[in-house]
Length: 349
Image (cartoon, rainbow, N blue to C red; front, side, top):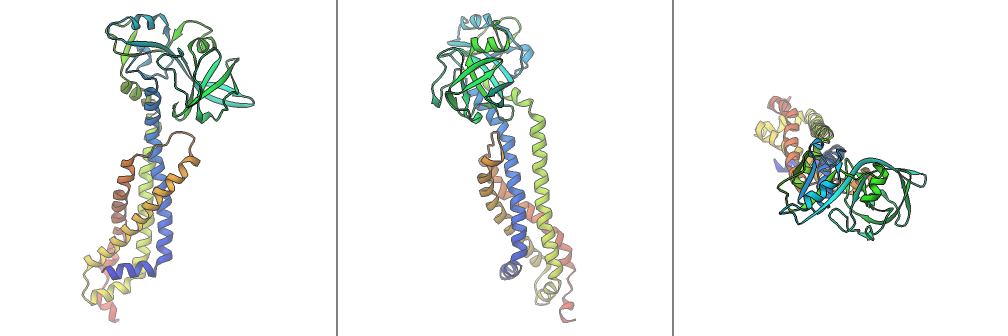
């Protein structure tokens, strides 16, 4: 049967090539969608972890989300810093979805006010960190040159450095300014903050505040993107179905064209199960070749298709061939009836 299988693959090479290209594109898109869904989680974990804290203190009204504007007095940071078990504590003001201007270009950013030299102050990968007023360190995804000026809230902020992998809410870049500058921009200079980050866990908190681990903060912040993640996952399932339909249609047409071949092979002693196994093998070979090409295409297209983090996990690469085998096996069922119904007597008719 192997000779029959590979002979048919060569004979119908163009048909199988078209199917491979179609399935490849579908599986590549499914892989990219998988990476897109994982990217939401990865960007939150990277940004939260970038503060260097093992405890976050937020207002109870924030529900654990660092993107919720639930401000409280900056004096809460001093109280937490003096708690036993706290080695370092620093106030943070995070305001999502602010509009900044780089010349005529309008940018959407997440503004973060930090105390220079303290927890949360990012280490610049290019340029230098915050060391004065009206300065910002920006995520390099903004594509803003060091030394240029951003206008935010009517204030001129000079870009002194860039960081990498600091985004939230689907690729919206973080920009870091001194706490005083951020307070002047968004709360008219009032001593308000939205979080206290610390090393060590305080035992007693001011009224209205609660503490979280970085993992809890990441999970609760990501929860607001759950609808988008679910929609992407649903689209990924649709891609699997579409791949099965493409392969199934190919095998069904091939089975129609091979009715006489099946009759001859049965007359020579081949069983229906052996012939059906040959079709299953063809389907699996098509989907596996398409899978290998899809993984290459997905990696090549990622930088060009998305402006937000895409994190294709190793598990996705590992499970895609398994899914491809299942898809191929299911698709081959479309030709089962044609194989079973082939009459050996037709070979002599």
